[in-house]
Amino acid sequence: MRLSWPFKSRNGHHRHGDDHNGEELNGFTGDPYPDFLCVGAQKAGTSWLYRQLESHPDFWMPPIKELHYFDELSRVPPVRSARARDEAGRHFLENVRWLSARSHLDLEDYGRLFASKRSLISGDITPAYSTLTDEIIERVVTHFPNLKVVFLARDPVERAWSQLSMGVRLGMINKFDATDPEEVVCNLLIPGVLARSHPSKIVARWKRYVRPDNFRVYFFDDLKENPAELRRSILRFLGGDPDKPSGGLKPHDNNDSGREKLRLTAKVRDRMAQFFEHELKACASELGGRAKSWPARYGFSLLLFFWDLLDDSIDLLLWCDWIC
Image 1 (spheres, helix red, strand yellow):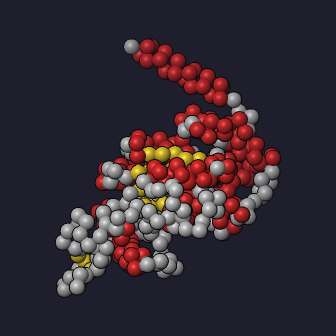
Image 2 (cartoon, rainbow, N blue to C red; image 1 turned 45 degrees about the horizontal axis):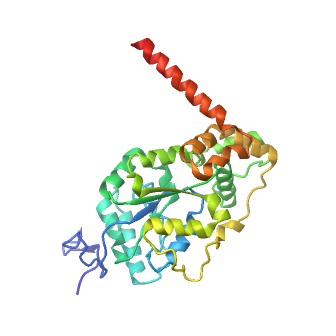
Image 3 (cartoon, rainbow, N blue to C red; image 1 turned 30 degrees about the vertical axis):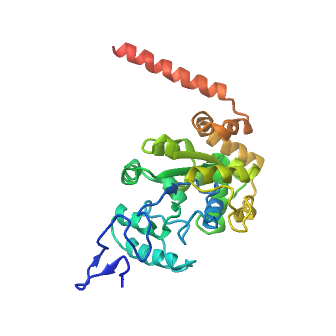
């Protein structure tokens, strides 16, 4: 009889199986690493993506959508309410409970969680990974050099408003006057909101460590306007067959789309746009794609942004010349 991982030896200490290279783990054979991470953004379609992959025959997804292993320093949120779909899921939950009780990050044992996938594709979808530091990102990517990384980008104004609405709805953010522009800006400065509201910086941070062919940016705009093509593109990148259906789910099925949000007035929208003006232009310049249209939604011109960049470059060159 093969023992489960992790298991206790006779002296009561935890120990692992004898082989870390694909030998049966909890009765399941699979590569001991995730194939991909989806690192956000929060309120940009990550729940839609999880459901599409969870029901796709080429994927085995953990019974918990968000593991939070790296951002919570191994303290994975309680999993008592999580429901396993199969025996592999039950073993996953047992092991993640054990792993989360440890006081430090263990990338090798984190990777071994995914042996439950067998020959299927699997990964960790945790939007909070968008806030990871360079040090942790470098550790993760160094340990899993073939890891694919997906980032779903959303217009910073829309995304932040959706996060504020969710925060108030769930009681995570105190109720505030949503018609008062300055009160709204005060809530945009909440660290948990602000850190997630600059996609250009998030993408730049991950790109420093992930190989270009292993990193993709997709856009929430496409989830709203062409979800079938967005699904196809992501599945193809991750190695799945986009022609296979995700069970009975249609590409446009999105349970979060009908959630109640705070009413966004034109006055507040304009003030939020001013707050995010530089970021909107940075996204257009650095992310490209659908982000190119974001500044124009709020009447901002990219020409002025590029002129400012050129002006800064000229100042830097003059300064360097003066130093020489």
